[in-house]
Each structure stands twice: as C-alpha cells, then as structure tokens.
Amino acid sequence: MVTKVVMPKLSLTMKEGTIGKWYKKEGETVEKDEPIVEIISEKATYDLEAPTSGILRKILVNEGVDASVNTVLAIITSSDEAFSETEILEAPKAVEEIEKRILASPSAKRLARVYEIDLSLVKGSGPEGRIVEEDVRKFMEETRGAMPKIKDIIPLTGFKKTSAERVSSSFKTAPHSTIIMEVDVSKAEGLHEKLQVSYTAILVEAVAKALVEHAIINSTLDENQIKIFEDVNVGLAVATEYGLVVPVIHNANKKSVKEIDTAIKELTEKARQGKLAKEELTGGTFTLTNLGMYGVEFFTPIINPPEAAILGVGKIAEKPVVINGRVEVKPIMMLSLSYDHRIVDGAPAAAFLLKVKEKIETTTELVG
Image (cartoon, rainbow, N blue to C red; front, top):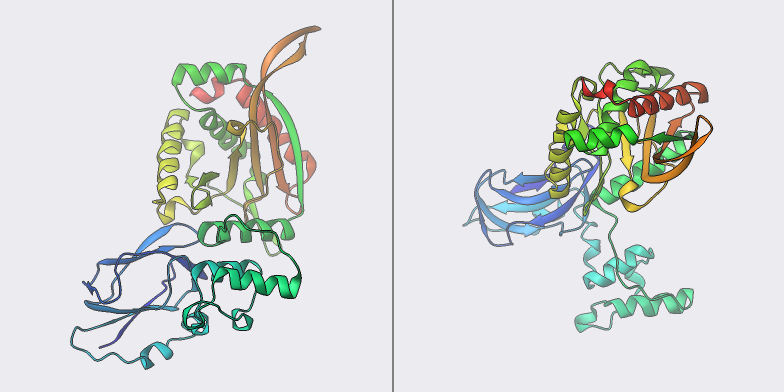
C-alpha cells in the first residue's frame, strides 16, 4: 500500500511549514513512528514520524523548502510493492511544486527566487541543459541590466519568514505609537548582585506587576471588542540561528524574580536549540525585547500581534543627573513602550511605563 507523508497542522494558525532536515534517504527502510523529517513551523521545530513501516520511495519536498499544510512531502511503500509515478502526480500540487521539473542547481533556484525569475525562461548551459547560477545572472543582465554580485543568500523560511510576516502585518494593522522613559537602575544593580539574577528577570518582574495594575496594557483587540486578559504571560524575544522567537513566561505576576530568572535561562537555552514546546511559545499577553547587550541605547520595537504593547530595553549607561540641586552620576536605562493606539491612549500608556519605572527604582517591591 502506498502511504503519503503530509505536512501536519501543528497549530490552529499554521498555514505552512519548512522542511528542516530529512533523517532518511530515498530507498531507506523506515519504521512506524520513527522520526523521518524535521518540520520548522511558525512556533517551533517538530520531528514528523513515519505513519507506517516500509521503504521511503520518494521525497517530494527538499530541505529548506516551504510547503503548505497537507502537502504531500514523501511516499512510503512496502518493500515488494511496485511504485508508480502516478501516485506522486495525484498528490495535490506536490511541488509544481517540484518546480515543474526544471533542471537547475540549488544556487540557481535560490537566486531565481530572490529576484523573482521564471526559470522556464532561462537557457541552461550545464549538462543536459541544467541551469546554473551563472545562467541566471546572465539572464538578469540581458533583461534588467547589470546586477550587483551576491555574496550569500539567506532563504526567508521557517522562523525568519514567520517573523517577517508577523512584524509586517503588525505595522500595517496596528497604529504604533512609542513613548520613552529613563530609569535609574541603581537599586536594581544591587538586586542583580545580591540575588545573582539578570536585569531582564528584574524587568519581567516589574512589568508583570505593573500589568496587573494597568490591565488595559494586558489586552488585545478582537474585531470591535477590547479583551483584557486575566493571565499575565510575558513573552521574551530571543534571537536564534533560526530567527526571532518569543518564548513565554506564563503567570509571571505570580513568580518571584528568582523563579523568573530560572525560567528565562531554561527558555533561552531551549530557544537556541530549537527545542521549545508549543505551550512555551503560545499564550503571551505582553512582550519584552532587550537590545541593551548590543550597546543599543533605545529603539522603537514593533508590537507582537495580537498583543497591545511591547517594551524595548536599552543598555545601562552612566549619566549625570540632577538630584536636589546636585549633579550625580547614575546608571541609567532607557525603556521604550510601543503600543497599539487603537487600544491604548497616550496617558494610560505613560502611566503604565511610569509604574514599571517606579518598581525598578524601588526594588524592595520585587523581592517579596
């Protein structure tokens, strides 16, 4: 019996996934429930298991290629079963979807995707008319004039593609406004040293408690209704080799700063290994993104939809400040709150950011 391996739907919002790595080659034996391919979805990576035992007769979608949910990725047959190409052709648009069987090198295909070149129009110079990268460049020069040389190509797939789509949608849909505030982290420095916790953990603790007091920031817009979340789940933007991901610290308002610090370390390590579970990537109600470690003073972050706001954190720098008529040098951090102006007005946004500032500057509120 011919069995089709299809792209699974790993979440309610998933529309497509990316093939990360095939663990088996064509012609190799596979056992039922054995991982055969790595799937990179919008939320996490997932090892897809073989639906049956047999021979992996045909791989239809190669590594690094995107495929819609329910697309046929491969064919498994029994060891003594005759294999018919018809089984592939009956698969719903299984890689036209195999790029119409155009013979071209991987680098030529990548370059064609970047510049939206129809490979059927390109004449190949390789063996049996195979199209190589130089053929695509020559075609572009003939049709578009001289093009700058490309050093490398990074496919916009998996997490990177999802991140690009989400920030683009967020910026087009939600009218962004950003306010910036300086924070004295003198006492936070003491807490950092005393408890051996990160500044990010201190910030998450302060944000979580401020969200309880300013619930409008902990909300979302659903059609014509603003829905305020009961849970306070703080997402933390983490840069990985797969792209930007946002693991979530659930019920952060009920955790101590030490518990938050431990959660951050665990989630960050999982994120960098691409091993975050679905529940660790979903349910966020507010996001924090920290670029201070890169020397960034302040920036205007883009809201992580469908949330109402996001907090950007800059570096800590010593600055002169006037206190009671005297100039003193203090460690100062800049916080940038971007918010959806359909949900939040300037005054409540400022009140929330001021509360975060107060909690950071009086760290005794964070210890208990």
